Image (cartoon, one colour):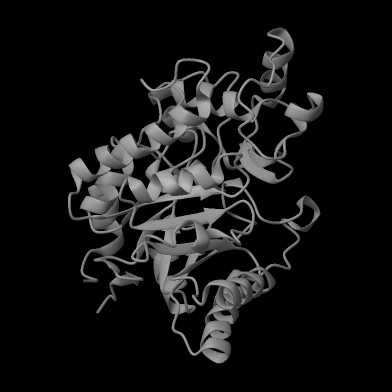
Length: 355
């Protein structure tokens, strides 16, 4: 029998979290349908207000919070009783405001990566039923978070997502030179994090494997290796319910395995993306003399010295359909996408005869 996924006080029928994908790749529509099918649906925070009715060109941070709550509302319209949460990058300038907007909007789970969310329990102290799940790539990161949270806030994570930097898409929690060396063992890390909470805190904290999860065999391997659940993101892009443009989805279906690789984000983190148009991304900013108007990241080499490119605008262009000059993040298995399907069909494939 397949175990359900219990994170804090919230229970999903299936042990699957849909990974957060910004800018507006995983919005309310995708998150709502994943939750409706029995998984945990996540709305991604980065750039959520762009191309929304809340943004007027000069109110980015205020619009960000309002648009975030609106996407949660859309998700709950689809799955009123579903387990719906958010993914908020610690690297965002309005991280704290977005966390507060998320709990006001009814998020049941907050997943945080791209930095260590050391003060997350403080930000959600008035909403104790909201489950908290940091993303880590190492035992050391999990230890630091657990120690800080337990000492300062007398609580532990409700789940921990262990992300494999060798396979995951988007921003990665590892140094560029350490990715792809063959030395990282994701499932050894999964088991070590599980043991950390059992041995040092006497707690059974669910550990979720993220990165490279595409099909049923990947799911079965993760569960057999000690993970309590999986997080999947790229697999959900080529669905009717995904919030990305048709052109974005088409690029997934056309890309080859060798087209996927690493970039250095202006956020100071490596990222995995489709590389075919990298020169065009930078050239767009040069041609248009793009200035940092939003200040969306706490640390950004483009904001500080116009190095690399404006990432939020590059992601926004791709989400709208400009994949010639836009940035398309993806995991290593995105090349396996060969058709537009539905969220329900993916759940049927993954969990048929397992529940």
